[in-house]
Length: 107
Length: 118
Image 1 (cartoon, rainbow over the protein chains, first blue to last red):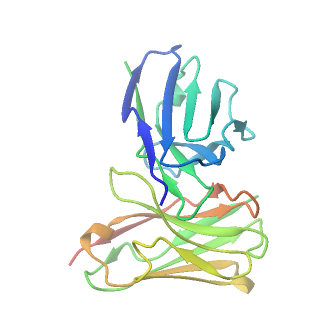
Image 2 (image 1 turned 180 degrees about the horizontal axis):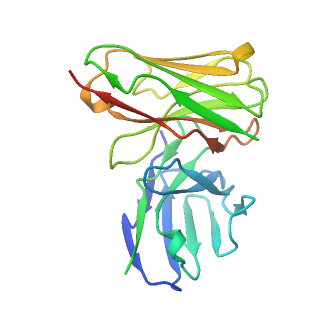
């Protein structure tokens, strides 16, 4: 199974900050990584697929990059509505595996 | 409008079988795969298994011996059955649509909360 190591587990930011979350896969995942946002009591929402392709409706302040085993997800100019947990997902192989999650809080 | 909705019992006794239904609309089960994902309270996401457009299935090896996923195309429903439930199976269970190619989970149900307790 491919392990996805996501860091940091939690992040404290001020409004307007830029934050970055990383995911490292245990093997090359050929850019087949997606990023999800999850708010309390809600289902995950797909923000980015295939490393850097923004879903319709995803604000442009969200971005993704990476290749091989190493990937990152950034939010520039954090807004209050971005306060949530974020998860990476590899979908190159079965089983699909998620990172452990990052909880973004306001400083 | 793409929708998925999970339904099933909120409480299951230990050692019993969990049965959940995912009813979909706005797309066909022959055009999109459907996965099940669960999330224990306060914890992360775990992929459980998938039913492909052709009807075959694949499961997380950690759950394979207890898990079964099936579907009824005519009713646009996907079913999850998992036996020998234990307290650690307490979680919110989600069904999610997967793209047929480069299968990312792009639409999710609201989730069904399941508590395993006597």
